[in-house]
Image 1 (cartoon, rainbow, N blue to C red):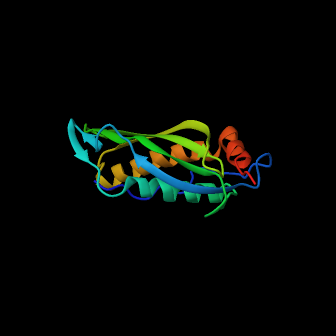
Image 2: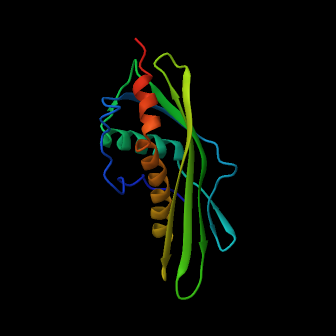
Length: 169
């Protein structure tokens, strides 16, 4: 099962006056999940398809831009990390099927000289209950869970402060 792009943030992400302006590079996010199962449906496991890392990197870029960051190519702090969890569990039932998705990222902030200066873990969840929970619904749920994790990151004052402080001249 492929996962669609991460949706727009569920709530407005306001630029922080304490940490603005932020310049940052979005580096690579490795797929470090224990297995490639993206969804378990009534005990049956379905593997993920596509490049989950690229989805997270693109999502982080959009969320950071919306939070007021400038995405840089050179001479800026870098965020990178590992996708440690991204899966959904679907329990078919009558009259409604229940589904829960969760996502977790381990993120490293590196200063502009590539020294690690901050580590954090961000997670997100999404749930749904629907009589006709199809593949599109599960994909949307997975995307919402990762979107929640990314939103948690760009709203974290400590994380943003470390990015802001990571520019060394």
